[in-house]
Length: 204
Length: 236
Image 1 (cartoon, rainbow over the protein chains, first blue to last red):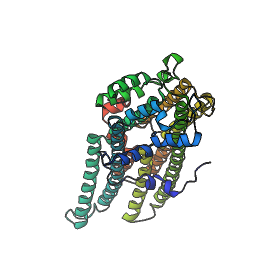
Image 2: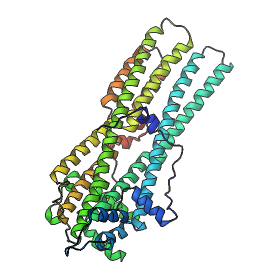
Image 3: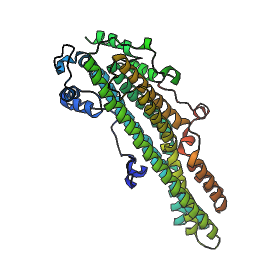
Image 4: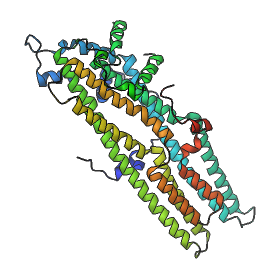
């Protein structure tokens, strides 16, 4: 069923940029908090295996019920995948991606706002063009137009130098690639299945 | 994990669509390392945690993007219509305020038009719809819902095939937004804006500023090299 949408789904409400999103990811202090974070990102956890055992009550080839410890291969793979080198890289890239995405939108929102204000200031300047050269209205509109123009130019320059869109794409792609490889690894699927053996060898 | 390793992962996922076909049997790992119950667990987890959630995410985004695109087109159209009417009446109205109003309205409309470029709703919605369709096709073909499909190789191949679709999508979206030509609602709105600007009695400089704003800040910010070669490299 199609989701009911309201005004809250419009971009200027739902997708408006936040003032700040941290660039660096901070590892949670406790392992439990990290596990909760891993679960929240829809990765597979030991709790999922336990829930599966309780629900399905699987049996081994001898007909005996299996326990968590019998999921040897999966537990071994999860130990590799949830090793900080891998999962930490995922969270770092995810955080950086959100930071640069927000920065990109923030710059664009400010750029658009200042561009409209610059246009308005330009019209005001032209509207008072008939006043004497040193009149307050001519001075103030000229200053306003100059400030707005300078801000627009400054933001344009920042966008060119910081390149938030390019960085957002790069980090987002890495994040998605890591998520993809997580599931490929877990299922022992091509194209990275061959890497599983070497990863295990270097991990143990 | 070193940066080089992450880079190589990015490159793997950036392979072309042709290389991302469902793997041939010989390519599959299929070491029979998993016990049967483990394979069942992997299959269920994959469907629940990856396939279904990703599919729901795409469907939600398509709805949201279409809503935003329609909203922007409607409001921009209304603003441009008001600007046209105001322009027609401006000949009978004396004073700077009328001039200001008929300048600000097209500027506001132009800002909305440029939001289409910044957020890329039409392109993104199209891309996600294609991905949804491919994923749904795969679900049938790979018989993901069939409890009988619990062979390790079959499950591994199904996972690889679905991941190929996800990778294909994530490879494209960045490129699409970067090299997106003006089109869909945006082209129509820009043409409307041009017509309105023609009618309005404004200094050329102001008209040019409004037009540039509507063209989208992306285009203005790109270097000549980027404009000539707009394809974003996957991962440098």
